[in-house]
Amino acid sequence: MTNDPRTSQPTSFPDEPQQSGSGLVAEMRTKPDHGEDSYVGKGLLKGRVALITGGDSGIGRAVAIAYAREGADVAISYLDEEQVDADETKAWVEKAGQRCLQLPGDLRDRDHCTALIARTVEELGGIDVLVNNAAAQTINEGLDTVDDDEMQAAFATNVFAMIRLAKAAAPHMAPGSAIVNTTSEQAKVSAKNMIVYAATKGAISTLTIGLSNLLAPQGIRVNAVAPGPIWTPIQPIAKSPDALETLGQDTPIGRAGQPAELAPAYVLLASREGSYMSGAVVAVTGGVPIA
Image (cartoon, rainbow, N blue to C red; front, side, top):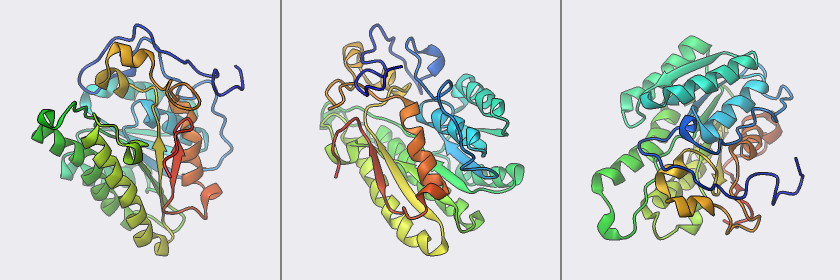
């Protein structure tokens, strides 16, 4: 593999079939790199327990693999229809010698959010890291195409669930624990056809600062990662085949990112390596500035 960041991963995704619903890695023609063959752990999360929402695929799977190889037991939440991907993630976590708790269900359900934390604590013995990663991406070509139900669902999944999960998890978290949220470059660049999605991501970035101010005095750090265009199952749902073929080519690096390229940031923010980081948003955008 070349070390040149411009060519170290695929630069285009031709003939990728579009998907509906929540999207599956199992149905992607060009499979994402989740770090299956590359991530090497250093024991940075040994003995820890992490809950990762959207842990079945994409960034969530890459984080689950990395955390397991760093020594953490992992719980993953996902939608029922994503079971085939969740089983693949579980296999990689267990191959690393760690436990993997599968927690299917819909994050829009407030009781499910509470149950996720309760089951993680009960079955894995606690919770040290909460990764709020699951998201619904909406595309709107104009204000007249914004569907009210879809908009409310996006905020329920992307924002309200994060608050509910943090509320439920914090009482179980000891000093040294961490919350890592997934925001997006869209919180700053706000593409005109993604106004609802961008609004949810802007809320997450602000929420991250507020939660940090609230929880840092208790020794719980809260940070966020802001991905750019990343090759995950969300892309074949939201974008046309033409857009998929050139995904990420307008970034300074000239290509889309892979989930494996995000995982080290999540490890940093969850581990002692990031002990003086709280309230930060770490950009992993292929060079797109978001400051």
